[in-house]
Picture 1 (cartoon, rainbow, N blue to C red):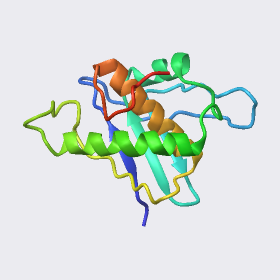
Picture 2: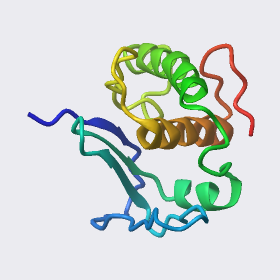
Picture 3: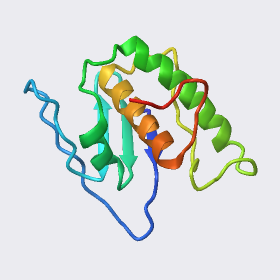
Picture 4: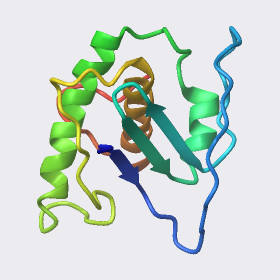
Length: 142
């Protein structure tokens, strides 16, 4: 059975059905080319799907290179930010339900690998900056 980590932010009036293509064999970090980004860890069958028209542009211009952060650092930030995200997703009366449409299924005891954690971290960083939100005690800065 495949388990999925899904982050879906719908853009009104846009239907997107293609995945980004990435080549990880070069020394240069790949650029995202689509508004739909799917990152998968085939070994443990986890996947992140991000649909957000602004994320691709933000990622290509603002993200730090892969290997800039350690996996431990990414996991620590993701753990705190996802916990707060899920609290807000479960409290639509207290938080904007258009921002926190669904929970993120992230288990801090599962090793999702570097790429999944890297993309989740970057999306949560982008989300906080774009929507002027603060998820937990860590500042959303580059």
